[in-house]
Length: 140
Image (cartoon, rainbow, N blue to C red; front, side):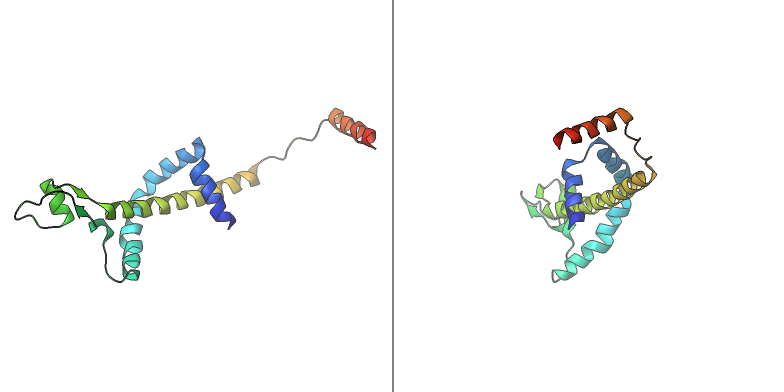
């Protein structure tokens, strides 16, 4: 459960470096994630929903369709018919969630490596140690 909490903190409260890493990695892996979503994840999800649904072709026509134009997403777009393409939004949302999770895992690994390679903290100065001993003695 802590991984989900960390992922939520990363996605919602990420700092500038996390954002920069997300943009760079997102650009580099965008096509891979697109293929993962369109060629692997979406067919599985559509099969689980009871048929071979292609989410990118789920839409609602908002205007009138000219005669002779087939009611397909591409044909309607080319004809300039206004459509509410909620299926495309679903696909892009799944794409984003997968990409964000991959980036989160990569940042997590990098942070662990940074902790391993980090130098040990400098020793506490002698005067601070003496002041702490005096404080503790006075408390007693």
